[in-house]
Length: 451
Length: 168
Image (tube, rainbow over the protein chains, first blue to last red):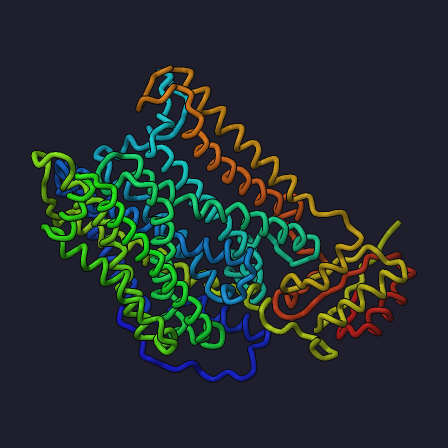
């Protein structure tokens, strides 16, 4: 997708009224034009290629994926961690920023939450794709069986199953709960069969005081439950690595390091999705420069924290005096994967520094390019942890180089198509800007002046 | 006793608030207030006479069930086959905390969502007679359930407060 033209925000001196919000959001739902279908076809075709590649891999076996000793974890786990990371911004915005009453969140949170749900759904595919016999994946779940076999609850992989399925469930619940009053607004403006469908989906929401009072309480409690959850999910994902003894993995730094990186990449993805939406749906009145500025600042902060973690990693390797840690870092920085290592540094630590300039924080092409670079950088960060880490551990005897194959590359490209097909579908059937929450931050209608 | 419903439609927060206060002062307490968004002032006024919402009870029970399930499942299943794995005793609490934590959040969250449905009486299969589609747009509604002989006084109360439309 090309960057949208640099169009300065349409000057909206008067803030939109409540009726404007309904109109501006509801007009985005409905029969899309040819351009949309052209994009959809392209995405669907890519997805079909990905699905075919997966079918091929199931047919010939996991060897088709290019994974071989020592790198039995390669691009699939890299992409899995990448997508879980993308899935962090949504719940961060809707839970943590909700509790902090950060008002700027209201116009981006719906899109970000949709992104979260779809990113986690994408990530969830990868453990299945990665497992050779994915039809046995249910073995990870605890279910009664005749042999008294239960999952090994001391294994980080089982923690991961619990963490991610909880995260997906709670994100979906949070997402749906937020959608209900908005679907009611859609219902009230629709006619015919659409009205009936939205009426069912809105659960007959009417916005009575009886409904709002429980809704608001429950929403606050859900936010409070989701807050530790957001921070725990990527911590648990990081334990997949940190609990192992591989040099470069076995570190107590990993949990905060992963969480920060996840928020960093998640916000980049939010920008990548919201900027074209703002342009195409003409939402300049709702997603203004201050929103872009706030997101760019968050990207900058998380980038600086990430740079700190990167330097900690190098420093501890050196200062610990541990031979294998030192060798691992040295190999990453200078051997066959050095290009990936330095690409990661330049994308994640150097590029976002441009956001120190106020102008860059609201300049759309800059935001877009930096966000794409951040996503590339964050994908390579996970790659650098997994592939060179496994490729250069304790014995020279077990060292090795991983080469991607057409099959695994196609599946990974296909995963992006899967994500985008879900997102593109969503924005045409559901309000991708929260009608209720945007109204909440607009001035309330008063007869006798504003206090 | 038969009751009749009177609905006042308002365009402003302050007039709606005035109507609620006036009605309360005159002893009409069976009110339903419709708002497009939760408005703090109105909520505050309506909540004054009510006990706190019971949602938190649902959340607490759900969360504690999750914690208990998490520890029970992990400890009980480890004792089913007492294998030392990874040099850890069959029952090792620290790793089990993670499972218990996740289930706490999971069941706590699901119970909170359930509370919205149970306490808010959703799904509602038929729209209530006093509902108006403008209540999801930019209008507020105050519906009063009163005895048939009080209808006129309620209507005049609503109009005086600033309702742009009053109907039965």
